Image (cartoon, rainbow, N blue to C red; front, side, top):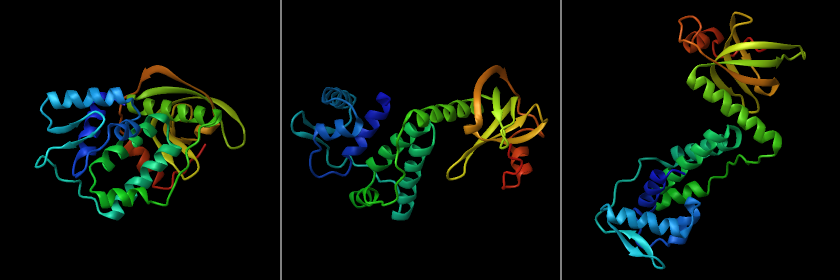
Length: 234
């Protein structure tokens, strides 16, 4: 976690509290040592953040320095919690870590009654990472990064019938179907839009070439072509 994120979470974990929050609780929440918490709090105090307390006792924000909570109702909050749990379970490691940090930030600024509601949410998406899951998460991260950077990908791919082919594709988006992912892309071999299953990609490398956002073969054109049903699965 970046230091800036830790400082943000420390401030908002203290907001609205009537009793001191022990440094050990902060350390467990942030996944850092007590020494790191002590140092971060001292730096915040030196920069003018009105934190009162000391090591071994706990910390509070000085009365009158509170900030307004985020305006979520219970149903909105539950949707956010469930959404972040699903991202952590099914996305790549990059988005999973982002979801974890985002949820910490959201919970840190909630009033106590909504924070308790978030903790009671009974919809789960268990997270486990065996070797296969870890490799697949890395594949999703690679595809996601290529989409953002507009990098052409070279793939060794097998279709539903098991026929293997070598493809060069311009990756446009990822979609999750509640059990399977698909990569939406412009396929240079087929000269058209295709959907590829990441679990059928035997080998995937970044070619080093970047592709341009061209009318007729960009994301907008892809979404129009599939019409919401993602036809044309390879």
